[in-house]
Image 1 (cartoon, rainbow, N blue to C red):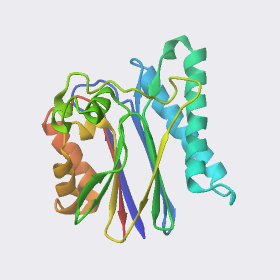
Image 2 (tube, rainbow, N blue to C red; image 1 turned 180 degrees about the vertical axis):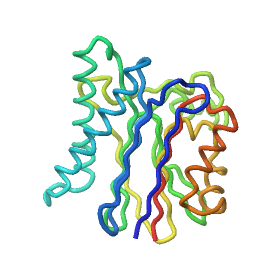
Image 3 (cartoon, one colour; image 1 turned 120 degrees about the vertical axis):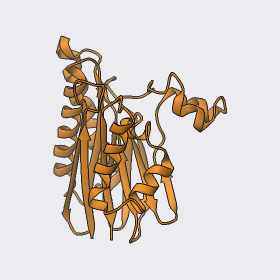
Length: 243
């Protein structure tokens, strides 16, 4: 059994919410979730995330019944379709020139989470034993951490922390990273935009999911924490509970 909850908010500083998300648990043991964080100006970021989410979900629903396509291939094709749709709109609409969006997505089937990401929206695996980030940010500071130039702690406050190196819709073709994680009863999966992960530490996320209260209220609790700290960016969280 899988339960799922999601929330999104423009935060304290931004005038518009350019994040978008989708979640669905169509049958027992199967779940889908996606979070996108748009960029590219006052209108365009919102359009980019909306197009990406809608195209991703539509493509996923079309392909998911194909027995010849394994879940990673389904995710890849859905992301490619989203990239094409956002890129086409950005190329044809002057108001949308240069827009793009991050994407983190999960397809859960047969006790396995199949994940995909582009940009710096993240997926975490959480249980009683701790918290693990499942995705790697495509960002300037993540590359700096990988090279040993700065520590993960320094990356959280680095002035270039919001610069991403890969975005859906920015180019005609996209490279998405794929991951797999075996799941057990008692596990949680958290998808979020950087508006959450930049404000709450991994240990705070772990505490709220495992010890903070009812899972159904967890996304609201985490959002409230970010708002109390000034929420300079849009905030989106999608939480799955595996039972």
